[in-house]
Length: 251
Image (cartoon, rainbow, N blue to C red; front, side):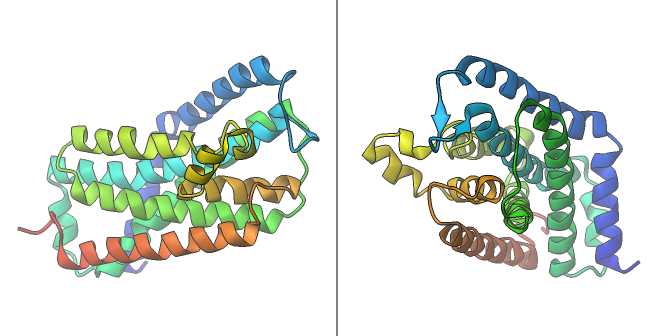
């Protein structure tokens, strides 16, 4: 294997060795969300005038799991390596900053897709789902996971202890995820909050992913794809530059 492939393999193996925690636990959490919200709102909420609420909820939960776990993979790996001190062994290798980037982001995409697939397999039994545009489903899942993997890379480089990483996740990632339309269509909101939602990049990832299942969405999927691609390019550029300069990993 080349250097980046070996690092990629090591990162995939890292989360797979504790799959009960990194894969099974998020799947269980998503199922609990579905059982609670689906049971309470199924009979009283219809989305797009044709979908049951449970069917609407399943893709949102799948994509939310993909995004959160892609972020957790790269961020937790870096902060753990920094705190335990084994990051020095990577610094001794001739790996370029691009190798680091592709390995960490690539493994984050793998973890996000594995967890998302697990959530889908379990929750799909609760609703009738169609696959109007499967290519859009795969595209948004991969791009969204890559974006969150790159964002996790930035958070892992910036944080110096687990408390800082937890704050980043609890006060930034979690609110943006829950306010992105996972549990509701933004058309059910007032005009002001609809406008606010359009400034949330997570909304476009969720909405574009859901379009692949039902062929309907709150905004045009082409717009969602453009926004997600733009944010991915911007976040990736920042992450690569931080790796190139050795931000907080080289004294």
